[in-house]
Image 1: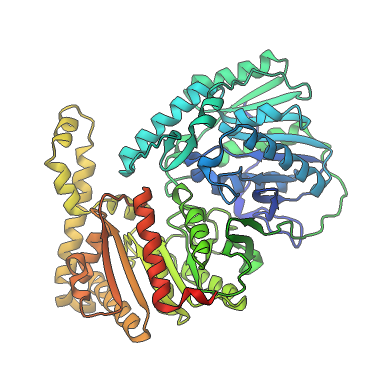
Image 2: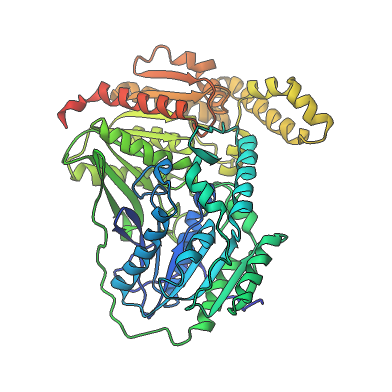
Length: 597
């Protein structure tokens, strides 16, 4: 089945006056999520995929919710316990019921808050398998299964292979402890839960309330066709469309592209099935989010900026009204939860040390609403620096401070430049900064690809036994490695001659900007900690402007450079995360005694 496209532009989707298009934060039990109200009596409960897949689709999942709400379907999307912004640590989820009961509670919340009379589930990946287990219990009329995990055992096997592939591409260590059943890019499932998921199948139960289904099938995936057959075997009227753009969606957060064609077809199918959904129900904007309380911390979602476009989560020591605060900007297009949920785990551990933090999504990243006036390429844009300052406004108004900015990759760039412009910043922890200053000729995606590893690491890899084996078996794209290395060499040469050219060349101007930035930090008394993984591409950027390992910064007593061995660009391993957290704590202790909280 192929349905007519609605041709919706996410940047132009409208919502009733007073409502945030990207959703109103909501909390219930131990879960956090977003409610997208609409004037209709057919509700949509969205059940996310798990782990790395959820990381890559979070922005697009929001866009899909916006599109459905704009067509009169109240929607709710939420994080299961141990995922996203919800409470619990991931390896503490040992029993399947710890996930199934929150899905039931989410459906109850959607009914209570919007007064919908009928229920639809939209789920993806593992979320399809989970939601199907409770679909009958929550009175589901229709089910949209996107890239469905139709059978647990094969699904877990596919996740394990996915984890190995990501580990190879991103140089991510795969940590497997005694309680770990599967690890995908730092996202872990506990072994008991993994074993229970392996036993699940789509056709285990026959939902008595379900009448219709739509399978959004990935091209060339036989298991997705199995899901279609399973629904039809149970007597459910089932249509199928292609999940065009799926591979581009889930490959990497920074490369992820919203599959508008597939989303438009999903919404059109819903519209065709429920033409009588609209009601005259009045919608009143309100806050649905009470703070979540965990061991030693409280968390509060906050929308701020123009029309509440920017989103953040304030994590503070329990019962603390003021204390030092660390702002965590987005790293690339990773949402505020961070790579492998790193920002969530960091924030909660900092709170237990007496330090507040604020993890945030800028406009059109993660749960940050799109700004139609902003550039389509959000990374490294000047507007992002302004968003960090707006976050400081919010925190200062609540009495939190002094302020430390801590970001990785493009988030490190934002932290450095926001600190240069905003005198309220006392310290910066910049992790694996691929760019200290921005060359307007570059694209953000190319920056990440070119800067993923340092030139020295490319040299080491070229002469390794592993590389030789991969070359002779045609498993290594030599042209790509050579292209990245040559780009690195050219930039290094251009910067070396930059001081001779002065402002006559772009590289000369960039060299001057970098020097001015560190001079400003020195004058303003801003303390700076530059942290790099051994072999990271950010070390090349540091060498370009500040000499190898930043030796030209030796005269700046306020700047410290650290290199972390056996770490990847995303600082995925437990050891790397511990180093980063300790460096942040040390920075806070330098500028303010934590005991004042």
